[in-house]
Image (cartoon, rainbow, N blue to C red; front, top):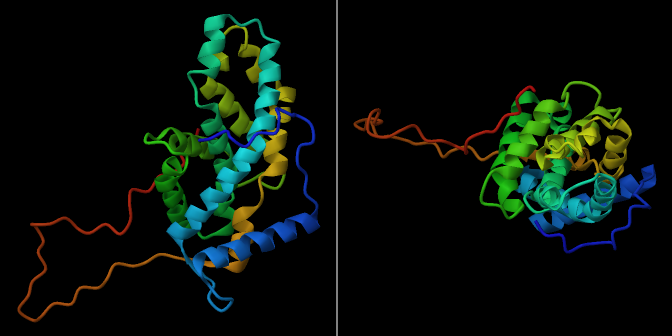
Length: 257
């Protein structure tokens, strides 16, 4: 994941949006999606894999915009800790912190799916996200997808989404744990610093748009079903020579923490 979009390391001026700004942003999102998908107003159907692809692209843009300021806040907090050269190297050079932040952005917006879609639809969308998110972060491993679903397991998907406090706090705490601040005596106290976690959660709370809510208001998600197979009277479907066809890839699920 690239960090090319920087803002000079500024920590002030975290983005806020008024209702008018959110409505305008929703219109821009849906307008761009229609143009990208080549759709007219009369057709509001979008295949799930395309919806997820555009969602992850939007979240990548959000992450690139928010990460420099968030990184500055984290660096300032770590600068107050008495770290050795090796400890600092382990924190900053051994971990793809920008990818961890991207995972947090994706997880926080993905957690809203269960409140917007039926259980079956939400499960399918979660699976599509798990199948695509690592490649969107330019990774060949499962670092991002594993972290996304770990965060989803820690976020209470059934309550508290309107308060927007606990989900962001859990996401930030998960990132800090993955960086390893809890394994270094000089930084261990940061995990229990609620004020710091809230400060690190503020860019996520204010800067991540309600993408799926805006999308659902304009589009219907569908999945392509497999083509039916028609046999002649004398033909028999093989039952032992080939496995049953799989319509989509392996679905990833959030697990309780």
